[in-house]
Length: 109
Image (cartoon, rainbow, N blue to C red):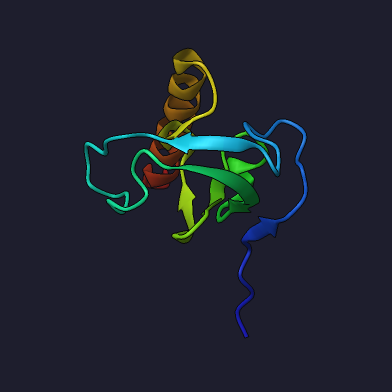
């Protein structure tokens, strides 16, 4: 049996970009088309934090589970939500990119 290392938390995490119960607005456009059109521009409530790679994401870079009344729930990156100043979203996005690039580096012989 393989264990899934993901952390799915329904409580606040010190250092996370949002708090549970916080109201957030989903960005109004998606350059890469990864956000469902029905969610674009909607306001919802944070209901969970998902760390699918806890070693690199915890605590500052979770996927954020947002519930939108009448639409349901979906997961968003912090920069897909209007929840922090642009400089903070940019910092998180750079951290994520750097972390993933390091993870792709082939091992040294």
